[in-house]
Length: 163
Image (tube, rainbow, N blue to C red):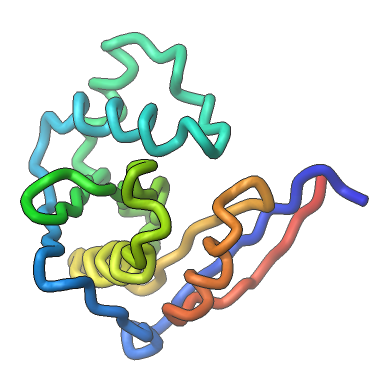
């Protein structure tokens, strides 16, 4: 049995989105450039429980180079005006938009916001000019509901790898 299974999911048609609305106190903001502190803090706080470690040793310069790229968009979701989660979108060649990171802060897990967060990320990805495909990957170490949530929103597994 493998230790890690990675699932690659995609959506090829905006009409495939099975949206889930957030509560009335749920809002989404797409940040402009210089969101590096937002990206860094959310990466650390959201990813702490899910073994997100790749960027933990990054210098300020590495974070700045990453976060200030024109290809990157950062979305922040709030509940009652308080930050609850985020997502990072990367525009790629050929009209692909990758949902690079996505997650809720620990205190918002189990509150029924995951579907609204994924919906917000997918809608934001499709709103990027020239988008033809939205994709992401998740793994067996992610939240137990992550894969099902992505599939319920209309993303389809196109590849699976095991390590």
